[in-house]
Image 1: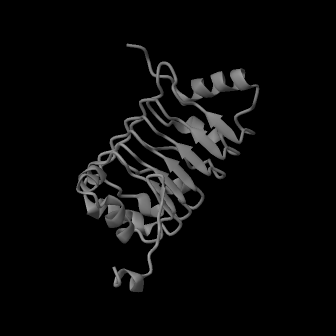
Image 2: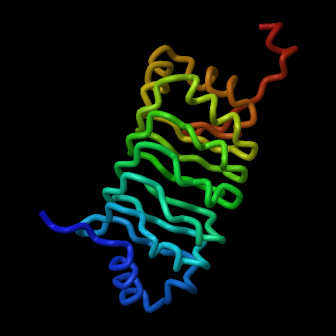
Length: 192
């Protein structure tokens, strides 16, 4: 079995390919490494100007070592083996978009630190309880959520009331699963 690619090795390859310096780059793409990256190691701290980091399509199990990324706005971790959201504290005050679809996340503990998060793409994970979903209500800026493919969404979509149930619990959402949320005035509903 091939040894995993380290972040350091991936960054060296990336510099060679792009001709950019990691310390100056605003967007760094380390997705789909062969062999895949398994750990978010301390080399990430060299990405001091990075605003958009992609580590999708690897074999990462834990979010870690984001402390040096003082400018990170978008973090893409889709298609990995991530089981929880620990490790986001370091970027809790700055991250605006988290793309974490196709992982193994069942619990949303730790999401509350994301004070600026506007966009959360977390389709095809393992969330099955409203108690977990409700933790998203702690995100003051969240406007756009993709949650399709989680057991919770599948159950309520099958019953035909997913959007209604989800937006009732997260009334500030502007978009869910790609669909704009239409607000109805309460008094109109009484007439139907």
